[in-house]
Length: 226
Image: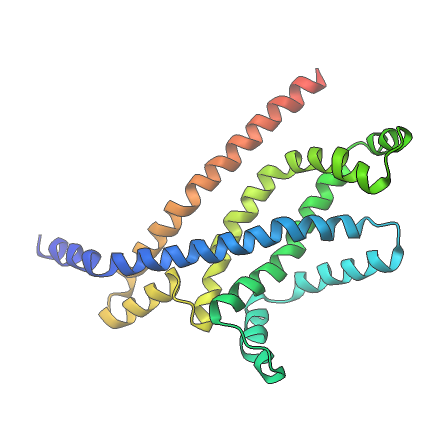
């Protein structure tokens, strides 16, 4: 019972700070995700552009981000840009870095969704007098967004976990606070178990949402096929 009392005392001391860090984690994730959702669509559309130099430029960006570690990107933004007179706070640098990296990955999800839509729908819209850009915006994109929703939710879960790299440049998010308290109390295992439980509590609803969306869309596809 004594060890249980000690553990409960540790929880009462550490949990408030961990929850504050979780709030910063949610902020970093939500801000980065908002940028990725909007910019990812733009990059995906540009990758499908009829203008070859634009396709090559966006393809190069996507391939570069695939091989570029997000941690290195954060270091370049936070420690490298000040040498050129551009200064950002650690929070701003983490959001910007995760966004630049995440847009490349999310654009590929979008591109797959766009290419899954029957090309005949684009041709039909243009035959009715719509411009290619208008057909993409009003006909193809709304359908492709619905297709990629489960993958988008899974991407959000991954982004939530990747946000822990923000701790390396001093953002007081969940992992930063967990590591700090683990070192201060010499009870790193117990503190990290609490950190893991909080990450699970934040990720599980998103995982359940992704599962429900996949089942829901699967039923619609099955009904359509019939």
